[in-house]
Image (cartoon, rainbow, N blue to C red; front, side, top):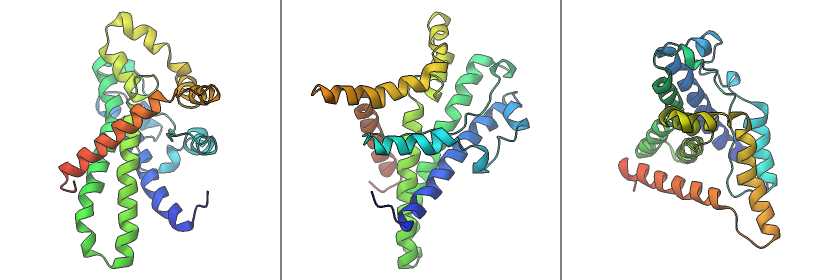
Length: 226
C-alpha cells in the first residue's frame, strides 16, 4: 500500500479532529453534569495529544490494515468519568456516553454541509478541501457507528448499561475489562478462523458497513447533497 504525502494530509486532519472532539465531548458533558474528573485532568481539551492512545489510535488500525480486515477501527485514550459524581448516575452515564457519537454525527453534518461552499475556492484548494471534507464525513460516521456497539467500554455499551434493568446491566458492565478483546475476537479472529474453513463469519463488520453507508447517505440527503 503506497501512501502519499497528499493521502496523509487529507486523512490525518479529519481523523485528529474527529477523535479530539469525540473525547472532549465526553469530558465536557460529564463536567456539566457534576463530575470534574476529566476537567481537572485537562481532558476537556481540543489538544489531540491529550487524547491519542498509542495502541488504539496508531497500532490497532495498522494491525487491521496488515491483517486485511474489512472494517478498520481504533480508539482514543478513554476520558475518565466517575459516574458516582454525576447528579443522576444512570441517566448521566447515558448522556456522557452519547456525547461522543453525537458530536461525530454533528461534525459529519458540518462536513457535508460545507461541500456546498467548495465553489468559492480556487481549483487546487477546492480538491484538497473536498477530500478532507469527504474523509471527515466518512471517519466521523464510522466512529459514531462503531462506538455505539453495545459492548462496554464502547459508548453503546455504557448506554445499554444505563438503560437496561439492573439485572441485565450488572453482568453487561462486568464485561468492560474484556470489551476490547471481545471486539478483536469478533472483528478479526472470527473472520480469519472462518476463512480457514471456507465460512464467512464476518457478520459484525458487514452490519457496521451497512449501517455506516446508510447514515452517510442520510446525512448527504439531509444536507442537500443526495
